[in-house]
Picture 1 (cartoon, rainbow, N blue to C red):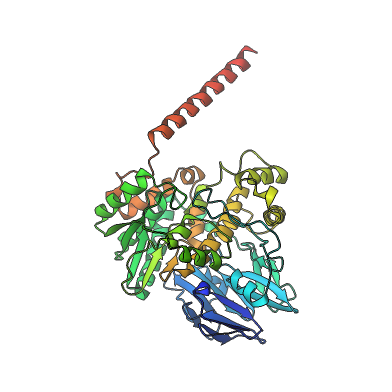
Picture 2 (picture 1 turned 90 degrees about the vertical axis):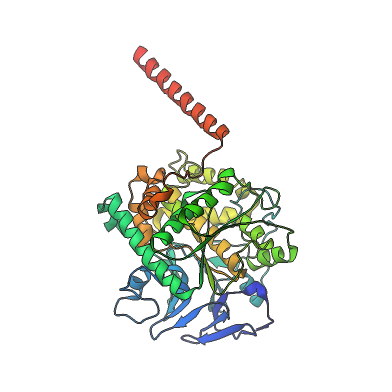
Length: 488
């Protein structure tokens, strides 16, 4: 196979037995005839025991990355955060949320895996199996994505959170039974917070060793503020910025909180902050990022790439994203769960949330039906079904595809809390505390109490009035019902 230099495949890889020649790709022989072909901008590290692909940083000095230790590899990986996969003797191990996604297919009795659908379709000349495609107008909902495990290409499947790969086993794809560490459930909220800060602080110091510049894209919300607060606590020099957006340019509104609060927080921390405005959209750049992800995802960040809204590069730089936190807040507890207890009821609720895509796209329909059956028996059992939807679909598919699209950006990017132990801690906080975001408030307070008085995502006055009225109506209905029962 031969290809030309192409930015569209930046930071991607493929593992196969076929020969693949491309000027901007390197190769590394693995086992039993398999070869890792990877773009020169993708970080790859080989030790005696394994091959590390992507960005991995330890959360503990006892588990350094890139060294052959006496600990089992799976135990080591639980103490690594970042965005990576590890290859060892045909087995593939991945980060906590599979954020460096894997697609796979079987061709001529050989197994092929890759981070990129574009590479697979280009190399093996595959065609889309249906006419449905996401709309990329700068409007609409960010839930527009292709849920797993199916893809628009019949031969290609996505590796789900509850699955693992062994290229040499009879069972190419088998169940991954990894559970969150439940030992943290015995700790108090204060103990959990101290441990989380300790883990992420160590990881941030490891990150800083490899990069000249660390960037935190601040919004008016909890997530990015938590990341910045831990960096501040760890005494890690970092710069903040906020991307200016509008409904017309990016498809999402820019709230007053997103405009005003990041600057106030940055000033209180005494760190640099910049509002990144947008000028003319570069249509070529937009087509690059859509092609790079094969149209698997639509999101405001695709437009951010088209408008080139990134800080000025000064040496090596890494962006710290604030995703994954929502898993601990039961993010879909209201929008997806409803009161449905049965599989059919849950599927109906998901269909409503996906904007009716199950009616118009066979890929969406087949994926959700398979996933709804899988989730009954596979993967972590100590998670509510709507949390599993967030973990499997929102993180493993939606966010993974978004990360893959943004591999076009020259900056490296990770989510600092994308680690098994850190997520286990987040899931161990009391449920009432998590739902209200009180655990994140505690994290920020322990790190930088000076920002305690700065509000987080304040709702517009209209929304606050609407919420108050709804609460009063519910209370009235409850009182009427209680009185009717007494009178009866």
